[in-house]
Image (cartoon, rainbow, N blue to C red; front, side):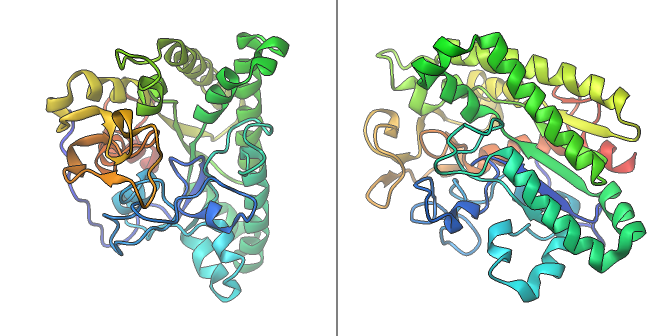
Length: 347
């Protein structure tokens, strides 16, 4: 286990962080989606955030994107959709990073498209940011800026859940075909970002999502859903293989892959070693494992939040996010490879 240490720098280690993904990375974009029912802008979310108020993060406090920003000495990236309502702050916000993540979203365009913005749409939003930055910095300045910035992508879990949740989808598509479509789509979006000037990528693999409270509550023994876990493993293997090939194809591209599955698995099996006393039940919710009813204002909240792995039925606590980011930033292989973020920055 890595020791968590606060990091303070006289100046940022990177110019900016541009983040993409799902609710694990969302910092409030879904607050601005009128059609979305997937939101976290109400108590008890944000109970441990500096403002003590819900922000749209699916967490009791800061999430991994916030904590990574702290590690590299940057301010928290604002949700992209919030900048549409603060035109005078656009340039300033865009220079240090923007967060495009949308709760409920997936890699594939059809995953929860009714109430979230898929990865393709998120990258399309970055195209608009790119245009704004180009006007401000000029082509040469922008290329320099983007080549040193971090592009973080945290997504895929909802695609797996969608596959298991749709009999129609399983009848039309084999699992191998489905995973292949996920990887191909992911690759396409990374290449879009690369063609716009991105060079340093931080990719987070799917975690042990079959062990979330929402999955455990479905069986009497409260065991993990190993079928879901096995798909996460297969996807992660396909993803890392693709990334390895992509690095060879695209000159100057470098990346750090975080094996969130293994680290999360370690935290479950060796809970005390990682500072957790509860790895099955959610901290906020109602019913079995506090996962029958989602984290709502009427839900009960645990007092020992730092010792819980899960905040709600599906999402980690700030403590869990902090553990993950310690590995992402300075972790050893095989958990973070071929480089950790600290090494990625220096390339």
